Length: 381
Image (cartoon, rainbow, N blue to C red; front, side, top):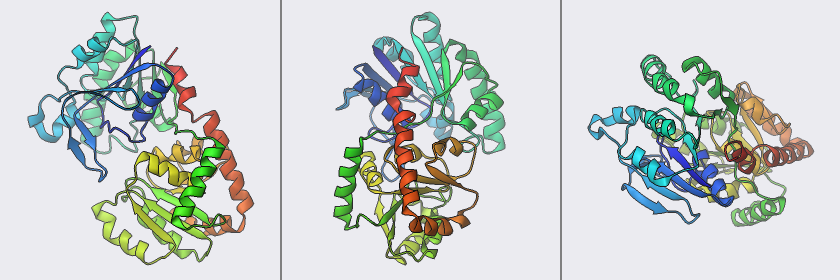
């Protein structure tokens, strides 16, 4: 089967751990011929945006990536809102897909996908939505003009050609319903992680802990991602430093935004139990997550939540509508305030049997539900 992933509403970055990467990789592992159409823009390891050449190339995993240029480059930042491209229709036609999966329909050329779907009724079209009030429509112009007027009109006109539109969290479902007025064809498809066997996790855990000179009985906490105010990195560092526990270590992984860099660096240097490792690749981050016990992320949403669960971590997250699902297997704790962190860590250090129970539940949760092999069956029939 020929499966086409269209990734034009955001920045498709090869080798990262986002859903557009992992879902396409799973399709390739399952033996399908997989294509990705993306723009010329991608993220760097410093969380900046870089432009790469247009063209076609094949990845080591067999996925063919087709980079197409944007129209209206002269519009500057507005081009990233309009999102119109040269050669989208002709490249879909050239791929001749059996299945098309649109990763987020928030681009004007979603209408081009609709045009192709209209004359190819035997092709199965699907889309998903990652936009919510937590990451989109956060000011009047974005909410009332860009989303309620521009994107809404394009999406509503063309979503009839879709067999399903998946929401990845419950707040993204609410966004589809309340902002775009879409109430049918909806189905839940949670973000997932790369799965490892128990033996693989144990092997990675031993290797990483040996390299970092960390004892097996030490509790390892990870805080990672695009480290900024929204991730509440400063609060995490402050709360961790309040604890006076000897057998606990905090590993911080990711690029620090300039607005918190100085303060965060000072806090990390002031506590010998904190290790800052900088940015790591998806593969490297997975290894560290296999070596850790707890993911501490009391801020904004991240795909690392699911990956940490897949690596058998207990998760400590901010309490909201979407994170409730992520602890539904008794595998974590939700926080109403970051002020709860230090007391919670102290409690867990005194009850490691309970911590082990959280970790076991995470592993089972991921194997059963946060599994792209399982989730991909929803659109590969």
